[in-house]
Length: 145
Image (cartoon, rainbow, N blue to C red; front, top):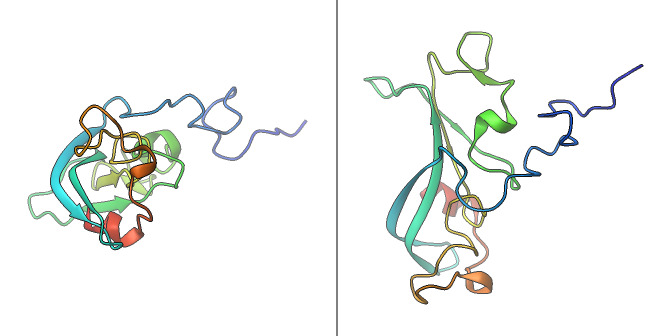
């Protein structure tokens, strides 16, 4: 009998949705960096911008082995969770952590660690941005981050 499981499903009980039980906020093991400010293309300025990211492998002395991975709009920076078949130690992986330094930065507006509507707003201490989070956040904004 053929399997009805979706290709690349992460587990038998998740229905192919690896983010089903992710919750909100910073995933375990993800690193952060805070930038003083970021001006968005729309002219809005974010302050104390938290940026969540994951890395795999080691940066070479010549710094020429970086592979930047973008995640789907509904995912986080944990490449091993959603592209585990592509990431690993050895030449048979597209992202070979024996040779590559893989970096995935969580996008602005995503609820998995980078500045978003659930992030505390420095202008209103103790309260998240909520509906005041500036939109749109563009790909260019994410690249500048």
